Image (cartoon, rainbow, N blue to C red; front, side):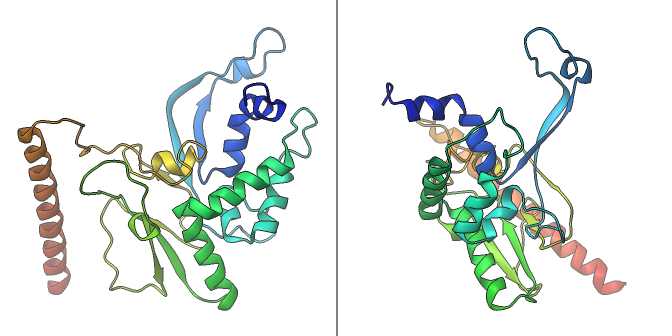
Length: 248
């Protein structure tokens, strides 16, 4: 495999392949003085923080779908959109066949792809249906980074169903409104939504309450206590808000 030309080409352009398959975009403040330099080694320097963002899943009228928006369409159109991403840049040449192979594999194993495909199919059947995607801040019981199922990482909220209760750290993705949503770096979807080629099966990223391997009993109990207190505080906050709303 190391001597295979296709493998070498893939490794040399792996960030570009990941970029065209990513659900999220990257935002940061760049040092313009270095970007405009005509001589010397290319230097990428940023100031401040770096953040990942995800947009509403329907592209604005007349605009080309980008990032997560691509995943609601059929595979043939997805391939076409991705193949055209760098068509204006003659210095970048990606393998169209490899793009299709990577995309097809993600359709088989990635739960985030599955949830967006569900949205696409529902909209085909009923274009006027109001569907929101809720990305859960997943807390698995054993914290072994198991491959998640679609139901564990996301849920579809149809026609603004108020019976669907969302945790405060969940992310709601709307069809055309809501703008860009920043994904907190401690959200379990932060890594798999952006580093798609590293987490092809949607394996969840690190979370604050992750229990290390071979952790002590006291450490595990402390984590469970923290989670219990967090849940109780969240419930108390919701009850207080309900009481306030009742008296207004």
